[in-house]
Image (cartoon, rainbow, N blue to C red; front, side, top):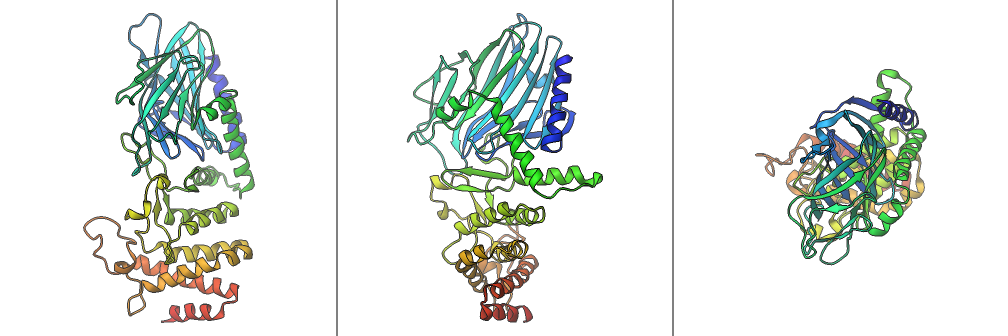
Length: 458
């Protein structure tokens, strides 16, 4: 068990540098992930995962198995998962067998569109491994690709995925990959693909997922750098934001900060914003709530302001303002594949009424805690349009109408579209008015400030 102890010591060292660590027995159905801003590995504690290079889902149900000695059938590594260790920057699974110990670490670069599974193998005999997966090569719902296909480079062990217009050409590969189950060049197989590789002695095998062959070729030169980049990113983030030295709550607080930081997602077509949450998508094409949601981003921004990530909070607000509707309404949700389709023609983008007054409240909170007058001057016309839009949602008695503005507390179910005015919407309207009155006064717009104050008093 010498190798296993070295793994635990290594992760304990990382925990001191990159925040908290969870160590526990592996539970097959429990979720774990490695999140970068441009790629992510989402999966389970037994080692199964799906790979995303935003906004494209590359594969699902990626899993490893091993042939021991002269066995005719491979043994799934999922059945050998013993221990899981999770940190903000990575997730690790220890698989134990009498003949070998395998420690796999998942990591995604905080900036580059690459992710890696590092397989550290300690073995007393040669082994043959199989990586099996279902190819997807589809963007996040509701966009889709036609003409998808794969090509196999046997010399370098790289499988390239393509779509009809050749805008996206992500890859999956490893220098260790040797044999593939099939290669049908004119279509994407709709069944499991298997790739095998041999391990003669103890060592490390990287499996890489990348947005392009160029990204792969750069990353494969030093795949461990992906893990190091992620560790440095979270070490810096946790170090530059407010820390809490209160043992009953320190670990929960650190994980809360890390969870928000892991919510950033970027791609060239849409930009960078905060998503509402992650989960494996399985046979679908949305990974949990992995879209950009206005309300969730603003509530995260409240926390970011409290722990001192002012630039992050501003970036979250700017993302929403960049997608503000012409009449001033603030977005509710935005798919990561919005650049691949006519997203405004779908009903989801501006479905909610509460996001616009909530934005006024959040903008005031940002300005109050940062004193960023330059941002106020730059964004004033958009802030004013947001306020004017809230006025257009009023009923004659001054309360906001769900029927005019959209959903708030009730989004789905039997009452959807039938609630005329809910109390939650009125609550955010009041704090939005108060926020706008302060913003206007800071701007020197006394008439607008008095208008908001008058509405508050009626």
